[in-house]
Amino acid sequence: MLGGLGPRVYFGAAGALGVVLVGVLVLVLVTGSGGGGGAAHAPRAALPPMGRAAATGPSPDSYSSSPSTQAYRTIAARTSDGAPLTEHELFPAEARTITTPDGRARPALRAKRLDRDCAAAVWGAATAGALRQGRCTQAGRATYADTRRGYAVSVTVFNLASAPDSDRVVQAIGDGRGAGFVLPLPAGSAQVDRFGQGYGMARGLAMGHYAVVAWAQRLDGKGDERDETLLSLLIEGGKAPSVLGRAARTSGGS
Image (tube, rainbow, N blue to C red; front, side, top):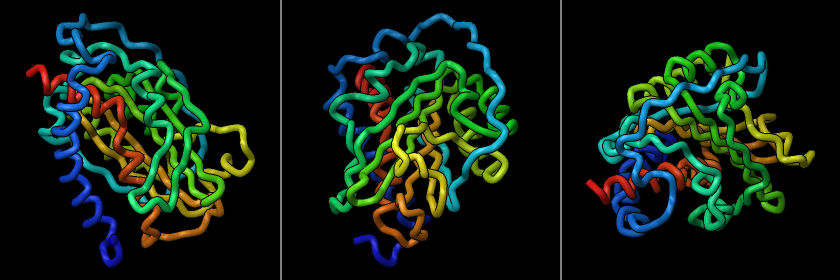
């Protein structure tokens, strides 16, 4: 049970579990397919141009962030993990649903998009500027929703130059909240596209040279920081399979 645990304690415990999860994934994914293998000496590619971010957009009521850890040391720089993320990595068929451990919510994938222009995935000039400074080359976004149980999750993955860059980006996203944030991807449903209205919780994770932002809320806009299902969805949404897969494969080869 999560009762009695504040978000900071809960996320701290989840961070420790994330280290264990990467170790398990080494055994499971080291022989899997994907974009990480063979990219250790990829040539330095020209950065794609970044456009102008939207001037306005929604922000969550609550945000926390965590810097990268040694669990992601093998993907700490894009120079040693140079292959671009693919849609197959970002949105694998086996991860089309985010499920909470207690089964109270099972948001399914409703929309997905992979952009080379990272500014397309955020609003606010300062947020876009942090991505530009971090040499962002890709932004993958997904929207998940469980309309029967009334929950939705937005997950955004940024491909940055290094772990220090991803650390700065997840911190800057929090510092700029109210003047900039990630943009949830529309899902073509009036109920789901109310995402961003009402109470929401978000969490930014630096994972090597990637930054992952998970954002969860109830579709009715209600709730608060004590909502255990929202807390669980933040943890599960932050387990980006593309990033964990890269970390597992490179760890297995080190």
